[in-house]
Image (cartoon, rainbow, N blue to C red; front, side):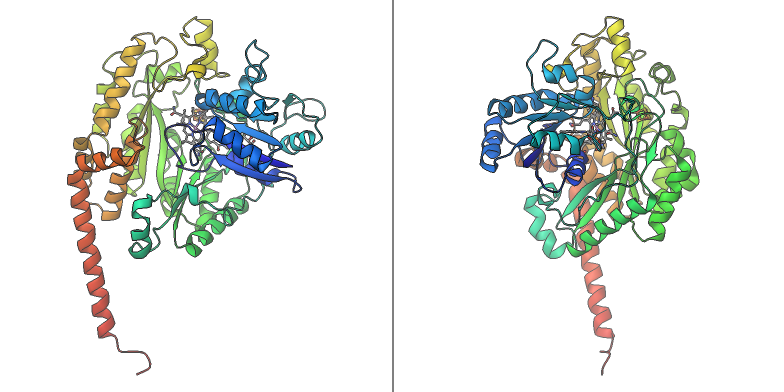
Length: 518
Ligand code: B12
Ligand code: SF4
């Protein structure tokens, strides 16, 4: 049987990185079946185009995975596929909590023939076999023989053949500069971000987060050897393709077991498996100097920190008071000292937020080493304690917000401001943080650092802006570069003169060195 795994387009990040679930399930599919993958972010398709593709390829089963914000789009695709008689199975964090919605058992339309609840590593082969035999069940739950929930172990972990896969659609180097970089940019013709999970689960239980409920509070890890082996293969691929590969450790809190993280990082260093990597780590765990040293030495370049708020009352409200705003500055300086960029995430519209929260947060940010801030609004996802609390208090204004998804718009009433005010605060924070002036100011504040560090900071700023401001066309990018022409030209000029000086030096060294066999 031919199986298609499909991930809907999120309309924002395009082909930023492959979605791990598709590659993982492909690796776990019984070998007699063929699995094709389409990520709508890399290959946008209408319902009609997808249906045509499914007909042409004679697909017998379609698997769709989606987060809450993309689920309405996923349902539309599923409806079109089921209309031509091809069965659809859905999985992922949203349908795990809203299986009745996907199966049409809540009085609405049926979108899926079957739903895989929770982690599907062990149920997927069964789903495939049942579908091939025409005996698909409605619900597949990861349970043991006694009916008790069973979380899959991550050791052993399947081999994802990244080294052999065609990743062309995920190349982050813009097409217009590819050939130039291939010729002159020594190994920068391609740049791929590859997701690796080293473990699953987080015991912290922040009120708005689905992770503790979905993956559980007991953490499971892959072996160090398995992670290192995957990185070595990626490194070899980067070398043989004369390109760059970055790794995104998608663990929710990569240093949740600090001792184990340190041991993994030491093994990466010992094996020479370093690749530039990014990960999410909570601020409290970054107090550890030795950990931060190991992060830098093992290739850690960008750390995503869920700061959420600079107000301790807000943090206590969402069960995240292990975050201490008073130590944010020290944590960020510790990272900056080692040339590690910090991506700091903030949530507005929390219960203690009042109008002016953007200004207060921006003021705090301005006192730190330059960071890449991202801002969102408090959103209650189904299955979270936050969703239950707001529902019980009658505060949800759009209880099924995912069915009419509206970016950056709250679906419940905050306590001390209106929904519109929260939206204005988010808007102000993005507008101010990524204005051309702010970009220039950030670069001036790191003027004493190496050019590659500054260049990467500017590139990241231009890309991060795109999370909020639509930046999908060539015109959008041309205008963005034009607005930021001062730092762009300054860095480009500096880079060209450094390149020329290095070439001149090389020529001089070559002419001064006598040939070996003279
Ligand atoms: C990587 C990641 C991202 C990446 C996504 C890009 C990419 N290419 O991967 C980035 C950084 C862009 C991102 C952004 C966001 N993310 Co995110 N992200 C993650 C993260 C950390 C890892 C996802 C992952 O690969 N997991 C590992 C795989 C193996 O797990 P999985 O995807 O759940 O798949 C398993 C099962 O769910 C199931 N399964 C999944 N799909 C399917 C399909 C079928 C057919 C079947 C049978 C089974 C199945 O089988 C898999 C194996 O067991 C998760 C948290 C987490 N640990 O999962 C959050 C998570 C998915 N993100 C979340 C959120 C909220 C967001 C944002 C909305 C945050 C924000 N406020 O901006 C944005 C949305 C951005 C956008 N525009 O799409 C939430 C989603 C909650 C929800 N109900 O939707 C999560 C769960 C984190 C959380 N704190 O709650 N994210
Ligand atoms: S620390 Fe991060 S992953 Fe863990 S529960 Fe809190 S938000 Fe979720």
